[in-house]
Image (tube, rainbow, N blue to C red):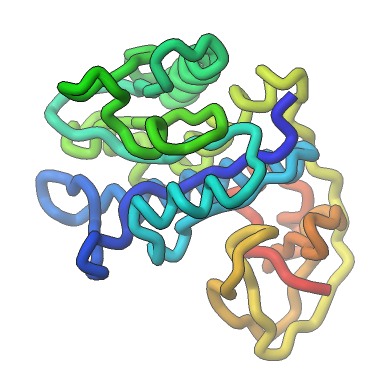
Length: 260
């Protein structure tokens, strides 16, 4: 069973240190990195809530590809998935895995099928991509030690696909689909979140994007509520309205994580 998982956001930082958007929509309005980071965040939230130890990597876009590979290999993850959006005028979800890995193929097929079903798009399935040397093309698959997949969630330059992931609701659904597939392979069901409408007053308090994020996403002041009262790595999920407590999908209602 994969107990320690890392969900990674693709792109964000270029080799020179600047901003790498990844693929963009035809009108240049939507960036692969910005959509993928939210899908990854929702996915990590669901996995943590289901009892996995799940890290969210590169949410801030501060790690170049080689840095992401190095950080993965410095930890003892059982499974990693890097989240992307596709481009090239196609449609549907597809997931790449390390060639010759039955476990990787199993994850890839399940994730692709889950995304396609949830978003009602084509299931392009589990795939491998090799370079001229015969080695795996993607470094996050080729050069990392754990079982790894690269998730192409949808085509950013195809209007019908983009419409499925351009909103917070769609990103949440996509992240939940990925988490559900990973959890199911490991014999775990995603949990319904119990309501916990206990209020907490924040005063310029740091709020994190995940239970393991190193830096705060923002600072909040005001009255908030414990979303479900479940502790994740010393942090708790909060929401801005009592009526939101325990509502699913969690990604649409959770404001972020705070340290108690």
